Image (cartoon, rainbow, N blue to C red; front, side, top):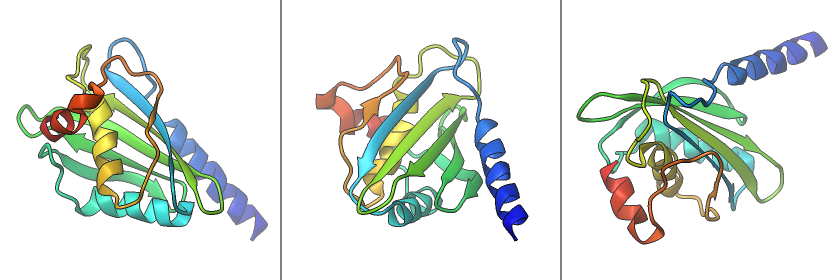
Length: 156
């Protein structure tokens, strides 16, 4: 039993490590935020959102892989040109709040992404039904202006 648990954790870590790394050839962005609910509830909300919501920018989200209460890796296909981005949401913490670290990376070579990678994550956050703090930017070259955030993410 102990061996099975260790193997399961190792398999989850190996899968997460397969997420494409950021590089100069692919547009990308990472965000970290705190959700005001347990990680169990936050994971369930994010997982349900990517499986059921209607993306305001009309993209198509699809589950690539997930480990319950740890991470969900999805792809998002843009509606017009059918570009595909990889997005991962990783949850951590305990108690009444949960830290979510997310990354989005374009699969095709690209430099400018019209804020799409940012919006890939933000649209899931804002449609999850769970209150969250303003996301802290990681490695993002393109970020919508605060005044245009909703309008931009409804478009991209």
